[in-house]
Length: 260
Ligand code: COA
Image 1 (cartoon, rainbow, N blue to C red):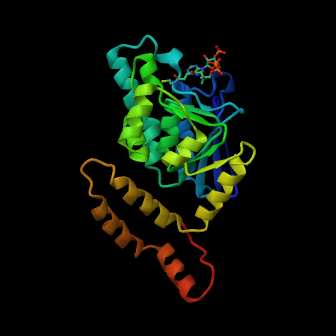
Image 2: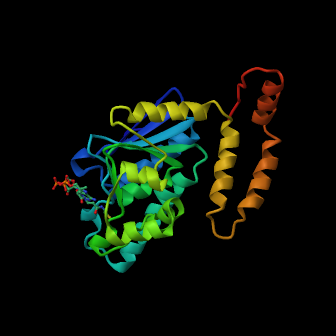
Image 3: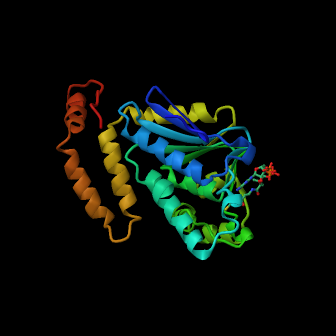
């Protein structure tokens, strides 16, 4: 598929989606959100993709936020629609994908950029990365899930402070907060993220999809995560991956999972 604002390539089981508007610090306009949706959907549907990495092009930014020039003159209704559409097309969509998604944060991850990174299943940052939700400095609040996912990841008090001050934290503070799992040099970021992806790929993609569903259930209204875990645990017993995984263990060989 041809994209204007992003790049997508698949190699060795990893699809790397790169937001590619460096002159605008990879800000997310509507077209980019739609292209990201399409690229994530394609990768999730492809048998060739075991893990998705999302990153930004250039040395400066992962994503510097939603494209401010696009919504500056919006009405209340248009604002609400912008948030609802974005959440459905991209942020909730990514969070609920069956394929693991890792955000490789290579610079500024602000506003919608940090929200995209937080929608990924986990995050790795380079040591030049800066993260924040500066929306209140523009007279608006985070609208792509930031008020929900930031407190889930760093705790309510830290999220309140980050959102109220509109300030940025650096990669090491993000590591201390648990917002990112690892910090690397900028040069090592993609290689380290790919190595992490390779560790994931050795395992059953069917079981990983079930684990994502069970973990996410804790954060869904009206869902009981423990009940979802029981159901998904049971479902695993009916899969070819479970048969292969357990047989391989008993036969003292490496599992070769048929996968999703
Ligand atoms: N929306 C639209 N354009 C953006 C953008 C955004 N969120 N973030 C950066 N850009 C554009 C700038 O307008 C500029 O475009 P121009 O060269 O056509 O004028 C270009 O990207 C480079 O940004 P610039 O501000 O010149 O870079 P800088 O190094 O001086 O500052 C930032 C970097 C990230 C601190 C600054 O760009 C910024 O504060 N961006 C907005 C962050 C934000 O509030 N995000 C939340 C949005 S809800």
